[in-house]
Amino acid sequence: MDNNFSQIEKSLDIETTIVPISKSDIDLKKIEEVNDPQKDYEYSRGQLYSLISKGQEAVDGILEIAQESGHPRAFEVAGQLIKSVADTTDKLIDLQKKMKDLEAPQKGPTTVNNSLFVGSTAELSKLIKQGLLNNTEE
Image (tube, rainbow, N blue to C red):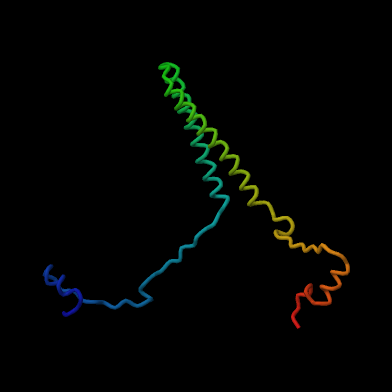
């Protein structure tokens, strides 16, 4: 058989045949991408709770080590860890706010275009006569 695989066939001492495949032989499944903000919110919230609880355990441990050793670096690490846990707690509150914003219906127009003319009535009349204030072309 003379095809693109002849060198491979010769090296492996095998013989192959090309079998045509029809579209009906291929079973394609469409993967639907689910955009579920509630599920994402619950997952993120659970992860943040887990991080906060583990961070609190780490804070307790490092504070104990810092008090026993009295080493300034241990207190510095404890302070950084406390800040990290506090930031994670803030992220939890921000997550709740973002979720409420997603669920809240939009109120009023999102863009407002107000035009304001500053000038005298004579100038306004002149502009109207010239057609500058009309958006129509003649």
